[in-house]
Image (cartoon, rainbow, N blue to C red; front, top):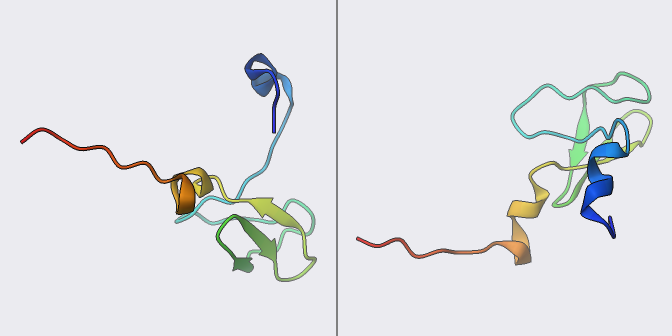
Length: 68
């Protein structure tokens, strides 16, 4: 998404869907969502938000071994 890491902090407000929290739609204020693997879509107006934890699931999951 970003080509230069230093731009990430200067892009402004970026709403995202957070698992295990009450999420209000930034478009209509609704609180019911269709949740997929990467995005969540508002059931009322159809606004789509990226899931904040989506980088930790699916093909991007990295497994590290711990020493016993």
